[in-house]
Image (cartoon, rainbow, N blue to C red):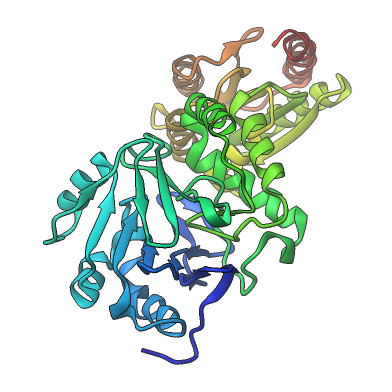
Length: 403
């Protein structure tokens, strides 16, 4: 163990003992430009308790931070809120090393840990509403299934009003600062929104139900401690409100135009559509998939109302960049969008129809007609593109006022 790794005090009896991953840049297809953290927490109660663990390569960093507070062998309980490998990868070795009295997980967590890892210990199963006495403190548990895995749960330390929220309210952000009030607000909001869009978005209906449950539970928060990113100690209300806003997926006066182009013909069409939207009073984000990453697109879509997609045709198909981003978007299940497809082609022109099929499967409400042009768009075609933009602007304004 390295002595220079130190724990960070979160509350009177809670310490952050996680790890910082400065180099990770891809998380299941999500671009993590600023790296990430794997947060674990130590409760120095009568029964010393470890909440979650870290990705396997960071085991020694976590144990060194624990050792800066207490001998790891004195840990009596280990709680697994979420069994995904970035939080459980080192658990078998840690459990073997410290030999705790109990390893605790949700019903699905117990099953998943046994399937993913060679955990040889019996796992104590806790259900929604169960409590665990730590001697001088108490933990209570709230199952949060499918937020974002079937095993997910919250753990609440009542005496110090600390909510251990696993992946909820987190973000991928590697910093030396541990708390929200130590980080620029713009960075916090961007990374929290990016995380929600790329991880939590498909489960938005469950988020709304969970927020209602939390509000009616009587729990009071002084700290929200997620498994990624900074610990919330200043603006807990703000991040909860943002989750409520994002989960509703209310359309906004903004359009995301996503395109891929071979010889700039589709790009010319995209620019003309964008100009029609802008002159219709709609904010536009024009995104060439040669320049932007798929996770940037879903970040922009999180607070938008329209998605317009264009592609040239290559070998009887849409361009690979467009197929990639549409597959990614479809899996994240954005709601309440309007949109349309466009593109250019040389001799076959299948791309536009393929995009339409994807948009329809995403339940995007189509506005106007598709635009497909052979070779380069002339002035008349570009006028039609501009008109499509103004029509989408008109329809988006109507939708925003009714949804």
